Structure formats: structure tokens, C-alpha cells
Image (cartoon, rainbow, N blue to C red):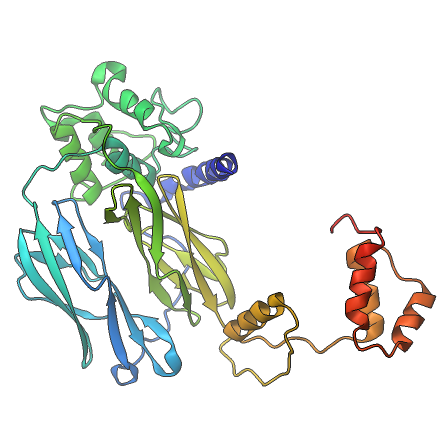
Length: 416
């Protein structure tokens, strides 16, 4: 199973590595086709407003937290308002909140964020500590994910088998010890300059200050630049053997029923082996399996487009994967219908129809049933005598018995 996962991620790395350079200097800029968003609901329609997480705890100047604000509308529908609410911080010297709901620390202390949408408000307690401290950095946990997010170790850049322009990294950072050696020790250590971090070749090329075949990958004032600069200034530590590592990741929310031309902000969290949890929304990589239904930008903002259906958005980080599902109904009133569920599969199928606003086809005739089932199970057509006998049978369970009979006679189609 692990080998298959690595193979899939390798294929994804080759694809993303070849297209990642289109983002230029802003790794969070989306170039996917989007169109106009549907208007947000008027405040009078919002029955309640909730925030996730309901409490923010920040540690260190590199930490940050993505808030997901959700409105409950009539008929129980949920609407993301993360970038539409107004944020007010009781003590703006402690933290600041971006327009998209990202909480950034400024100083140690406690305060409160109030998010409001019309008359509806929600309060989020916030604490920040060790903001001015130079906390230890673990290369595998903190630096490698930045290289992956920027596409540096993708299959189309330094992660390919031969490397790029004499510099090779492991594909998607699967071998952080190899990457550490390549960055710190190879080429006489010329890529990093702890005495003057801003003059490190790694930062100069990534910010486009000197020629770089991969183009500009980040801005000087970006979080990625600040973290890598702090790591270089600290003497490029690798970390301790006892440091925790990522055990799993989760996404919030994991499912939403959305209208067309709508949006949903995601928040992704890494759970470490020591029990700690860290917001990795800006470090995770995202990919939609159906870009005609929904697209996702590098900051984890999902946009539904003009088609109905269901799209799965994969978030991956440090070899771990989680999925958000966006269900986009037709948006039309569904007429009533009768569909007696006979199996467990029928129950789940009917639930999915209801979510998508679909109506099942009419029940087919006995002649159609025996033809379709025979082709599906045996790969052959039934004889005229078998069709006549089946159609004339008065047994109410004849369709179930037909399936059982075809499965037991040993003449199965290669597809089954």
C-alpha cells in the first residue's frame, strides 16, 4: 500500500512540478478560470454564525491560524463567509487578522477576535506566546514542506532524477537527510550564508534577485522567506532525533453541499506524534480531481464553477493525504419519487441522489433487465427462450434470482 501511495505521489509530483512555475512570485496566486461568484446571502438570512477553530493558540513568530467562518442559512444550508465577515481585534498589538481570516501573531498576550456579518457575531479567544523567541527549527518538519509548496523538489525541477543545474533534491522531500546535505554541505556550502542570511544563494534565486531557471518563487516579505531566513541565521540546524513527526493530517470541513459559483475556505491541520496539532493550511498542497466542477487555489480556497456534480479536493503534506468533498446540486426542485431501497448500496445511492438533486430513471422492463444483467455478468446475450421464460414468470423475486443464477453458473464476464 505504501509503495502504491509513493507511486501516485510521484506521478503527481511530475505533473505539479512542470506547471508550478506559472505562479511566479506569489505561490498563493491562482490562475484557474473562475468567473463571477454568486452573491453572498443577505444578513437577514443568516440564522447563526460559527467559527472554526473556536479558540486560537499561537506559539512563535512563525505560527498562524486559518479561521473558517460558517453561516447557517434557512433549510440548514451552510455558507462560507471567511472572507466576507468583518474582523475586529480587541487588542491589535497582539494579533492581526487578514481579510481572508488568517490570524498572525504580533506580540505575547491574550485578546479576542470578534467576527461579524450584519447583526450576527462570534467571538474567538486568542493567546500568543514566545513570539520574540528564536524557537528551534526542525528541517524535515518546517523547511522541507516549504520547498515542496514552492515546487522546488517537484519532478519538473530539482526533484527529478538528474536534478536541475547541478542541484538535486529528493522527490517531494521524501528523504530530508539527503536534502539537508545537498543544501548545507554540497558545493562547498555556497548555497547558504549564515553570517548574512539575506545574501544566501538559495534566497537570492528564490526571490528573483539573481537569475534563476525556475523563476521567482517567493517574495522577500513572505512567510516562507522569513522562515527559511531564520533557519539559515540559526546555523541551518537539522533538528533532534527526538523531535515529533507528522502522524496524520485532517481538513475542515471535510464535506460541504455548495451551490454553483460559490466558495469554501479550507483549514488543514497536521497531527504530530507528540499529540500537538499545527495549522498547515498555507503549507499543504491542493489538487481537485474534477476542475470542471471545482478548483482550488494554493491557499486552500475552493471555488465551484458552472457544473453540478461532486469534486474531491486532495490536500497532501509530508506524505500524508486527506480529502475535502464538494457536492454541487443541480439547484432545481426535485420532484417526489418512489425508490424502495433493497440493499445497503441502495440506501447510500439514494442519499447521494438527494444531495445532488437527481431523480432515478423509471424502472426498466423485464426484457431490458435480463439483457443488461446477462451482458454485465456473463458478457453474453440471453437466448430467446430465456428471455421469454423470464418475462412470463410471475415470481416477484425473479430479478434477484436471475442475478444469483448468473453468478452461480460460472459464465462470468471478464469485467466481473
